[in-house]
Amino acid sequence: MAEREPDRRTRRVSTDDGLIGVDVHERRGPGDGPHVVVLGGVHGDEIGGIVAAGTVADSEWALRSGTLTVVPIAHEAAHRADARVSPTDGGNLARSFPGRSDGGATERLAHLLASQVLGAADIVIDLHTSNRGADMPLFVGCLDDGSDAADEAVRLAYGFGMPMLWTHPTLGPGRTLTLAADRGIPALYVESPVGGVLDSTHVRAYVDGVRSVLEAYGMTGVRSARPAPSLWVHGDGDTDSFSAVTVDGFFERAVELLASVRRGDVVGRVLDAFGCEQETVTAPTDGVVTTLQRAAVVAAAQPVIGVTPVRPEVLGLASDDLVMTRSTP
Image: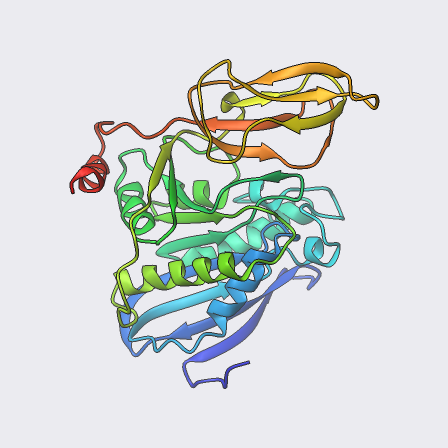
């Protein structure tokens, strides 16, 4: 662990009864600047995000201005249980914001984070990974709905250095990004494949991406420009772009992550214990495979593949200019 500097402090933020809380690591630069908040472990078993957030908190970056606040483990109970959701009430913290002070354990934690950590944020970065049963590519995502906060989020995401950018026209309820959007704050999130496995390459990409945001605001010195995303997809990421199985069985995939598919293409099949095909699974739309079931065992109604359209050059948004930049030799 790096030696502590005068501009660093760690504090415990807890509910009034002390039963729910998080460790908050803060660094302040000598000059005025934005307040960047980084979260890891919103899902307790997403270790890559936790380690990346902890690495950021313990970094030796010299802050010139602003404040960097990091919560490496946002859902401590889930992390202790090595689980995605709360072992107490089954709540999914990533779908619980802004929470309630008088709610269940997960709602109370969401309220604590929303009020005591995210309340002062100017930019939010939420570090996730795929879950253990399904994969997503290495990417950075954000809202892109034409609002000022979303325009800024897309600018930051574009410079994050990830190979894929996933922008969303809308956001589902309860997310950190939804909370930020409601408050007019730009927010980013990241994902990577093979959840539950710690990959140093992915951790470094997360850490470098966070630093790129600090560099964009002059909070640290600039090291080098990051590459623009080689792939940009645009879609809401919810269940309307997924195909689900209709029977229990074992899923065998016929495509890989980031494969280009057309609606109706066969992307996998479900087998029984004798290896007999029970059904084929087809792509729900044209686009790129952005979510893919990895675990073999599946149950009826379970989504197994998500497909997202490649972003068109023109959506009538400010981000169209970045698309044109990518298209210009």
